[in-house]
Length: 319
Image (cartoon, rainbow, N blue to C red; front, side, top):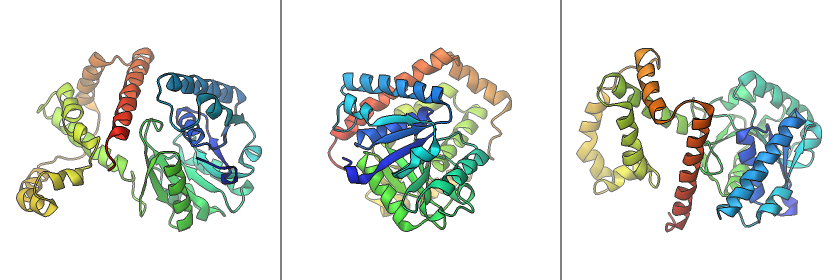
């Protein structure tokens, strides 16, 4: 739980990710200023947050030890960046995933922040060396990439710029743990960080299997939802290997030849276009029509599933 000396948190950008971050920091007892250039957008975001927190409290799923009203009292809006960042100890940028836009925001921040605040980007794939190039306060800058939706999925990838001070990463790691997230350290820059590199590898092979007529789109998704995904909700691929034999050395001795053989049969990177995208789109739309109403309903169902899974994981014995 935050104490008064911890300072406040600023969220730059009041979209869905920004709203989720605001709720997370408030759940940890931190004062949050939600910044956007348009007051109307801020008002809308604060109303969305109010509804979400009230609903979560009714469901008994509100994070943190504070009640909903207390958490809401910690979140305020601000349309003046200079005023928003005054006294802040952490700034979480959540503007759209556009390099030039983000660089413009960080250049603005660079002119007005002190030497103590951490400047963190929610970028999912833009490298810190590109985001923070040339900034005076580069030692205080890093990426803290959440997983959508952050309120229900705790992983945060911490990615430093080559010049980021190690203490900046340490402070952010501690902060993320304080608000109940699961931070991991990416030790050097790589495109896609860790989560998206793994996700894209799965997407790529999933696409090839459908493209080559080996499995239908709906059956492919079952491979994950009713197969690999059930294991991976609790243990990762490396521990899975360790447990699927008499330890890692046994697994590699037993299965490495087969793994290498299969990997050599993987095809080229898909184009994600043509007849295959039409085939997959048709299958997906049969399950979830792609109009806003159906997609929103399905996302709500997804979030409810994640909420229940999160509860189960917290009830399980410590890792």
